[in-house]
Image 1 (cartoon, rainbow, N blue to C red):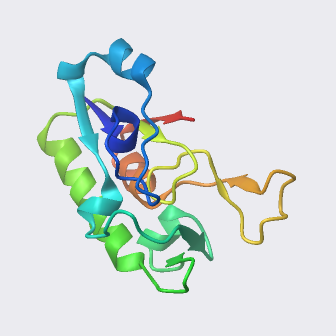
Image 2 (image 1 turned 45 degrees about the vertical axis):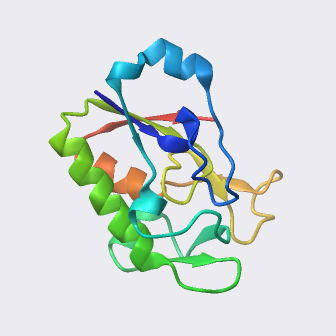
Length: 148
């Protein structure tokens, strides 16, 4: 079983209400082997919703209580992101997931590049960090594959 970010499977669960469907990935993995998950929706966030960013660290720091997740309106969404990450981990464990294909550049699923704060840290505005759900899954031994 492979846990896949639901937006990659065609579900309109991204913050902007859109999808990032990757048909080639779905075909390669085989539909019967896919467990689509959106940690942000599992955490109780609506779709669409204001874009969120990690503030003060990465996903592991959020889980340790040393960083926060804040939306573009300045509202602290840390609790929803942590809840969603924990529920994602529970699903991965209960469904016998052996690997995870997660959407890049996401504050929950990202396992490579996320928007930097401030945005000028790198030329394209991104820096390498783990999202909240990705950090929790990785801490429990799950292999994370980033999908752009």
